[in-house]
Length: 122
Image 1: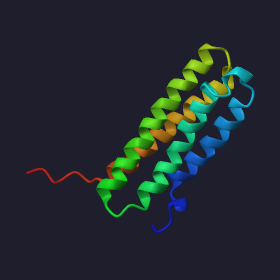
Image 2: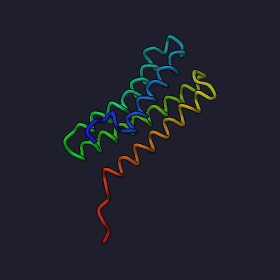
Image 3: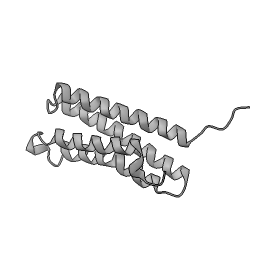
Image 4: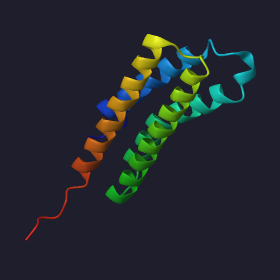
């Protein structure tokens, strides 16, 4: 695959960014430089790291960037939970975001393992 934009995991990451931006647009103004900024950066980090890693020269480098993307998923999931606890995100929106993050994290894990085949056991 020559173009990172063809990767399903990257496409799902872009979809998640759009959802996070829309979800955080209704947060209180005082969170503009706090939780809103952190959540948006974490979300943007996911497809950005997939893209950057894909263009690296080695599989080892790509795997490192996929690991960073997974870390950003965990960071974003934590921030979603905090936003929910603070009553900034409600019901279906919270459930939708949580499931999208979980799905993307699983996709990243699967993709990571596919580009990192384990050596044969003897």
